[in-house]
Picture 1 (cartoon, rainbow, N blue to C red):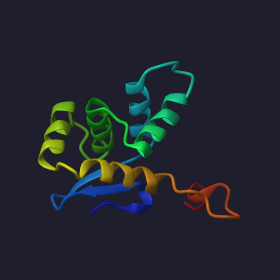
Picture 2 (picture 1 turned 135 degrees about the vertical axis):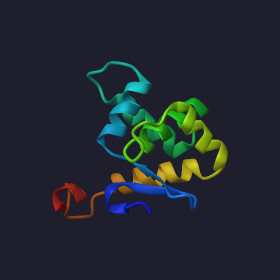
Picture 3 (picture 1 turned 120 degrees about the horizontal axis):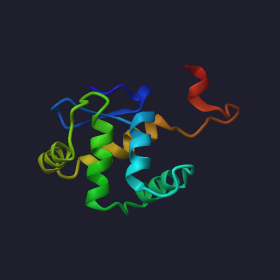
Amino acid sequence: MGNPFRGESQIGSDGIVLVCDINALCEIRAHLGGDPRSDAPLDEFFERLASGDLSIIDQRAILAAFLRNRWPGVTARIAGEVMSDHPGEVMPAIRQAVQLAMPEPAEGDPLGKLMRR
């Protein structure tokens, strides 16, 4: 089972855990390309994730990045197999992991959960 306080979610009952951590975000940032000094591609990723406008290639790359925390040797091919085995479950799990990793700060707590660790 995933740990929601670490930005973890789970796909199905197979125990496949996704982790949205800094390493995964850096990997996604590299996948999206653009100026390496700018995080604008991540902002675009969050907007596209919210709108559901991610290509299947992007979905597979994001899933692979989120799987690598627990499964370091995962490849794009393995991520694609997970997507095939769990249709309809991957994107909700990705969205949940992102939401858990980066919750909206509570009123009066502008730094959010990071300062509470």
